[in-house]
Image (cartoon, rainbow, N blue to C red; front, side, top):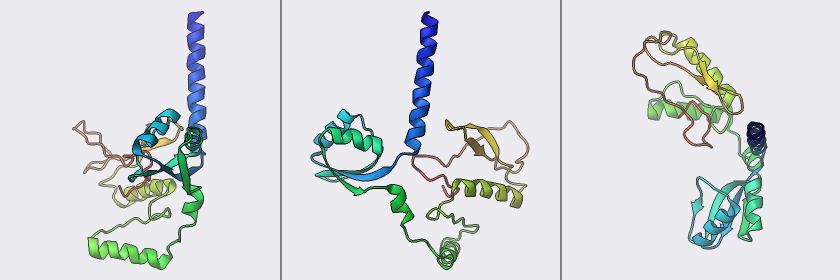
Amino acid sequence: MKITAKIIMILFALTYMLSANEVSANEKYMLVRLTGSQQAIASAMNLADVHIDHAIKKENYLEAWLSQTEFDALKITGIQYQIMIPDWDTHYSNFPKMTDAEIRKSIQYTSDALNISHSIYGTMGGFLKWTEVIAKLDSMRAEYPQLISAKFSIGNTIESRPIWTVRVTKNPDVTTGRPEVWYHSMIHCRSRKACST
């Protein structure tokens, strides 16, 4: 009986975690200014069980990007707020798009002023989208087969997406057993998934 109850509790917890992750992936994010003393803001956030990893702090307010769920929890605390940007996706979509000439000029500047060749310019504010990163890994292998291995998966994310990696060495297709260093491009949870890191 105890084992059955434990199994049911574990399954319930897993179901909850997976469904919560799916909901948060589709949530709207907004820039919110919370007004009051730092102590009052911290108290409201603690009461609402809202934890942020970065914000703009001023003497009498704090601005942070919050999910709809986080915002709803904070509203209940009675903290004064002002919505600065109501929807990140809409806000980002309204950014002016660079023309092809502007992109070429930016890449040329990178080459001339910074001595960087093979500059990568993605379609997401200059950063690469996921599909562009994958294509870039494939093109790097095609261009430098003596230096970079074909991409291979080292596992899957919690959302069942493959985690791709490559081996960069003078013998990329041979596992040598020597010490290795692993660099990855996702340092912070909201960082762009880009080859430019």
